[in-house]
Image 1 (cartoon, rainbow, N blue to C red):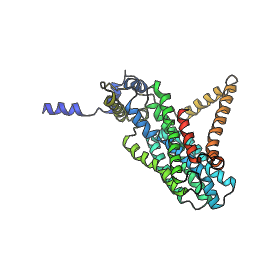
Image 2: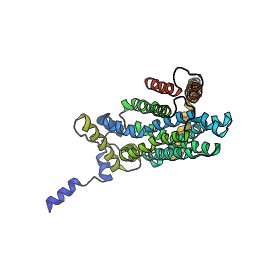
Image 3: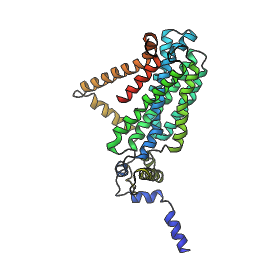
Image 4: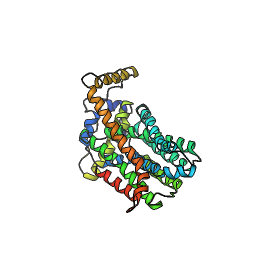
Length: 342
C-alpha cells in the first residue's frame, strides 16, 4: 500500500499551487527559454504558426494576377478592379487592429488557427463570387483573417524564442511570404504563363488550400505561448509547453532535460493602466526631441510599403503587356526568388 501511494505521488502532476511554490526563486520564462535554447521545437512551431505569411503571399499575388481577367469578364471599371486588390489590404488593417486584444484574451494559438480557417473558407468562397460586390466582400474578409493571424504569430514567435533569437525568428517566418508568392507563381505558370485567359476561379481555390493544410498541422503541432498561459494562471499547461520544447530540442540535438520551473509573471495591468501606459509611449515618440525621427521612420515605412505592394499589384499587369522574350508568370517567379535573397 505504501509503495503504491508513493508511486502515485511520484507520477501525479504537480498542482498549480505546487508549481507556484517551486517558482518562487525560479527565473522568468524568457530565461527558461535561454536555457532550453533554439532548436527543432521552435522550427516546428514556426512553420505551423509563421505559415500565415505564406498564405498572405499566395493570396496577394494571385488576386493581383487575376484582376485583369475578372475585370474583363465582368466589365469592371479600373477603380473597381483596383479595389478588389485593395480590399485585401483593408481587411488586413481591420484584422491587425483586432488581433492584439483578441490574442491577449483568447490566446495566440487560437487566433492563428482561426486565421487559417478563415483564409481557407473565404478564399474558397471568393471563387464562387458572381459580381464585384460579392468578390470584394469575400476578399475583405480574407484579408481580415490574414491580419488576425500575423500579430498573433509575431507575439507567439517572440515568446517561444530565446531573446537572442527573436529577430531571426521573425525574419525567417516573414521569409515564408515569398515562398507563398513562389507557390502562386507556379500555379500561374501551370495555368497560363502569359497571364491571359486565366481560370481565376480554380486559381483562387488552389490558393486557399495551403491555409487548410496549415490548419491541420497547426492543430497538431502548434503550441500556445507559455507566457500567455502563465498570465492566465494556467501554470500546469505552461509547464508542459516548456517541457515539450525542451524534449523536442533534445530529440534532435541531444543534451539533458533541464528544470523548466519559472517565476510567476506579474499580473497584467487593468485597462486604465494599459491606456495610460500607451499614451505615455505615444507622448515620448512624439515629444519635441523624438518627433523628427518618428516622422522620418513613419514616412520611410509608408514609402517602402507603397513601393513594395504597389509593384506587387502592378507587375502582373505590366509584365503581361511588355514582355516578349519570357513569360510574365516566370518573371513573377524570378522576382519572388530574389525576395528570399533580400
